[in-house]
Length: 159
Image 1 (cartoon, rainbow, N blue to C red):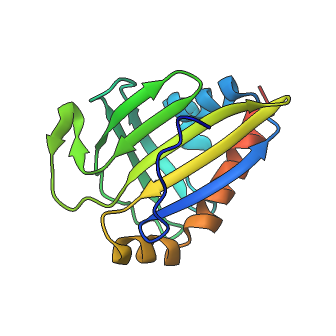
Image 2: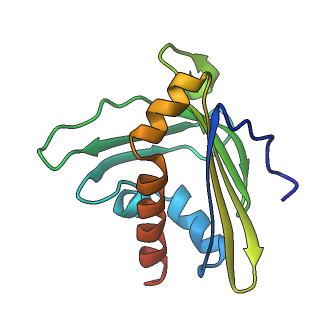
């Protein structure tokens, strides 16, 4: 895929799969808050709030709830790039309107490429340093993002 950024294995995590869902349905799941809350967090966690202003500089924010009822803080990030049905890039290093903020964790790329009747789905999490990457991997990046993708596919199959 020509839109794929350079990958540094010391800093970046990648999940790549082909799913049996058309790119425009994957896009809907990622860009419409009423759909994103249904799949974004691996069960038994829940996404209880989502704000999306789908434009560069626009807000991307979620609040997640643990099985015990604890909620994550609303750490609003922003979109850096939006290419309909093809590419989303967002970060928590900046807030809405590109406002710099502390405590950055990652910049995420969601790349969608038509493949047969489905989509080649590529999720990339870029980190500032090897320690941040290691922590994200130990938090369960591959399992968590993979489970969330399975949930997205299950949801999109109902449309």
